[in-house]
Length: 286
Image (cartoon, rainbow, N blue to C red):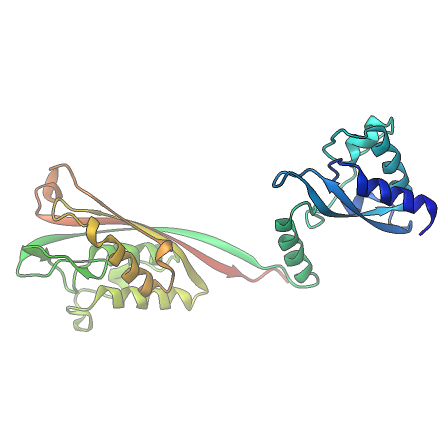
């Protein structure tokens, strides 16, 4: 190592100055050095392992600037250069040439480097909404989110009339532009008589998956005057998540009353609203 490089490296190691650099700003034709810098950072009191790449001319300039600002702080090397009386100009960069300041930045940099030379992965988020309502009658089980909730009445329907599963199914079909639950599982088809709505939901997920969609998360609101469902919500989330093939943490379920208004408020019906977020891989243009 020549004396100039050694001096610059020594300064970088010893002076507590915050420095962040991007290689695109440096004259890459020049020889390069790597310096380890003791620098204050946002996440810890002192980061003593920040690694920076400098061209020798830039290193010498920065060494002088650091010496002039000994004991102070600076947002980046440009601020130090300006403080030392040098002109700083901005050049156009590229989004993949990120600054590596914290360990989290390394994860992003590695992901970018891993995709180099490959076609970019493009995804398209799609949102769908769903709604379902059923009358409540005696002699039927009340199935909500795949769970039988004790009650003196249940929902009337061709299948088990699970309003959460039906609303979520409609939301998923809607996000994928595949119509609604009645199109795929019509109530005049004997195959779906007394069918489990969790099974219908699994089939819906398979249909959208065949078109390249994956379910990211769903959120549903049940509107029911009684009974209260709060003690069953975790079991519902687990059951629905299992049908969707996702984690329960990606399923939201809430219960609301209708404050005594209309058929739902009078306890004559149960309803549910749902929203689903889907993602689809899109082939990049050739």
